[in-house]
Image (cartoon, rainbow over all chains, first blue to last red; front, side):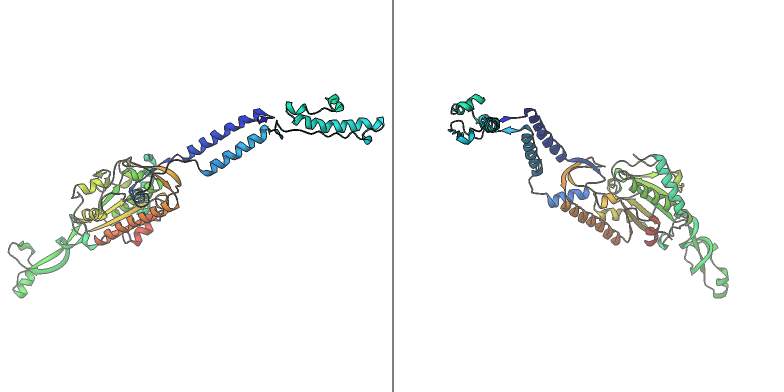
Length: 143
Length: 284
């Protein structure tokens, strides 16, 4: 079952994800500051950080969440489509061919139009194999 | 790098502020060369001080012959000495003092204020700069506004203690103006500074940024004097630990001063210099 997109150009918006992660990594880089003396800072490090593993630069959870949101927005903008039925599933088309459908001439055009619109919607969802199931002459005449 | 014009302006401002004050000179400091103040010991002024028995070797011109005529005893007439108390202003000119303009201004103004107050008290004075060693700055008793340009660079503390003895005037007053970011233990520093001094005053200057640093997140801190780097992540816990460490550092210096019978004046975060020095008994 292959996905397809209504507006594939919108997928370019996904480029924002690496940019976002890059921004977070750059922001996570330590900033340089000049201090008069490291005398007390060294004591702080000895007291609180000794024995700990050095903390690696990591992308925070909020960045991952934002990336997911961007991906979802891009997919929504691109109009991702998936077939609603499987290609190998059988399709039954039931057309009302009752007497009421044989209305006078002035009503017939409307009923055919309605019927045709409904059938067209079904027709669009059908892969090639499914279309073979439509055997009604009137429907075939519409397309 | 702070502009020399700015430093000169601060020196002039300090001098103007010091004109309204006098340096309080303790009795122990009333020693030295001949000068304008009366000292504690016998000397050669015209002010009578005391009598004592004649001892072989005394100058016979000092014998009070009237007393000898009345009592048949040789008594020496003693006069008060005239001395010039001396103030040594030790100004920390290391790079750490030049990082923050607020701190530099406070230090420079304090030095000029003390020089002007010493002049009012009839003291001589000498300014010394500490920057990897102790060196004279300007001439003796030279007005603060005429001092050579002050440059804040180099290391602090080490030069003062390494040499053991300090070339400061014996029995003089000593005022050290510094941020006290010295690696040496305070006791050792105070021992050296208080050696043969009448009284030592430590003026501890810290900027607000040093007392409560506005930092957060991952930082790479660089020492302004040694260029040493330290990478750490600053959060609320780290800042609290820094505050405690700084308090311990200040308390250690305060205790060392108390043991050496020295004054400790903390000028933190733009405190009023004159009021603090008056409260500490340095000025009057």
